[in-house]
Image 1 (spheres, rainbow, N blue to C red):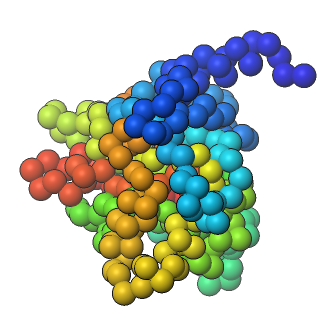
Image 2 (tube, rainbow, N blue to C red):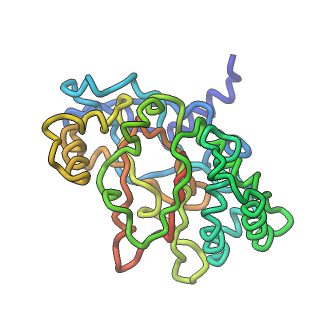
Length: 311
């Protein structure tokens, strides 16, 4: 069986980052979920003290929408340490050097190519210039992190391992404003992806926060990592939006209506707090709704420079 110390450690972790005790608030039941099964960083540990703002009550899928839901949700989001995933040397430079973060963002295309290598997403068109991609990403890592830097392959495989099965590839969102619809509650599954929706696939978000007041230390707090709503069951908003009542609506209008039909309220929203030791967000898309934080579109002071999504 599982060692007692590990079981106790898991319970302590859930006390730190988990949901409130089971209770009914406004007709919504808070449900205790287990940590995501099988995810692990380099050392297989999560952030030491993950925290998030908001009540984060699990949203129970209404019985009227039973036909669009899958099995009971078994996983919850995780906040993972950058140091545990890539090593303490890279984590230290990531937080201290804006030039490193900018250079790493510049390697997005190389990361995209290497992320596909050795997965079910690999194809001849995307795998060209494989060695060039390794060289460019490897150079940036060595120049900024030094001898303790991971290789390009180690960097990509470390974060790839957090995803489990792969289905959606890699996307870098670097614009000053989120893409259209990102500010609405939604899921990433398209109709063609539903075969994966209730599987072992996980979404991994690596955020690049804007520099703090010093120009070097990164901003900490809300508005950097993706906001979430945890669902009581695996669910497909894409199937829901195929209803006649959604026809003729724009994508944003469909997302707003889906969130309303599900009953999303402020008390369901989780706003993960970005800081040292909890820089990476891991969640199962089929068991959550998500949206970009409003701060990413605030012209008075954007909290993040970019965010990378691995699926």
